[in-house]
Amino acid sequence: MNATIEKFGWPGTLIKEFEHWLVLLRPEQPTLGSVVLAAKSDVTAFGELPAAAHAELKEATQAIEGALGRFVGYAKLNYLMLMMVDPHVHFHVIPRYEGAREWGGLSFPDAGWPAVPKLGEAVTLDPADRDALVAELKALF
Image 1 (cartoon, helix red, strand yellow):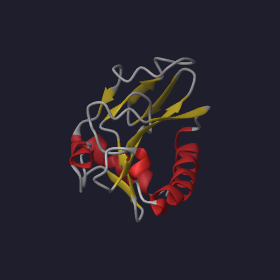
Image 2 (image 1 turned 90 degrees about the horizontal axis):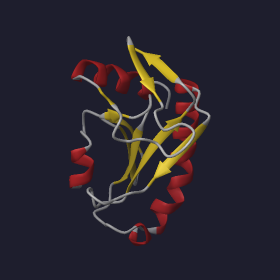
Image 3 (image 1 turned 135 degrees about the vertical axis):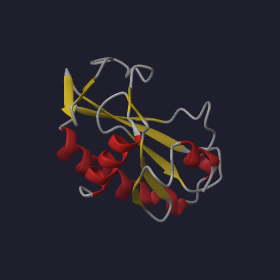
Image 4 (image 1 turned 90 degrees about the vertical axis):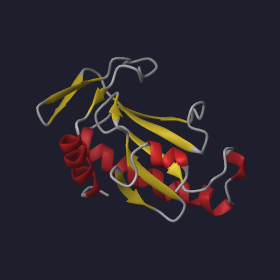
């Protein structure tokens, strides 16, 4: 796996694996259910991915949208391809909602609603909560 995938906690954060993509739990949760959709490739430009990876995005995004819709009941879903610090192709997938969602005794407010998500205002999960959330999300895919 590439360094970007490893930075986001793989394999401990792995929720779903596709042929060309991984869905990983985002260690910092700006909103409940935030994930990373990461290309398995070593390329650092979206246009350099093989055609099959682009085609598989349909399956991956449908799976993400269905699972997160059932889990968090988002109003919108933001796909952010930033790649400034972590160079390999990946999206931060941020469920958006007004107010907060509760899970595991924790509150996850959407501090940026209804504007740009505030990635710096996130809940950092301890290892036990991270593992529990990964397991709960895996069951929805």
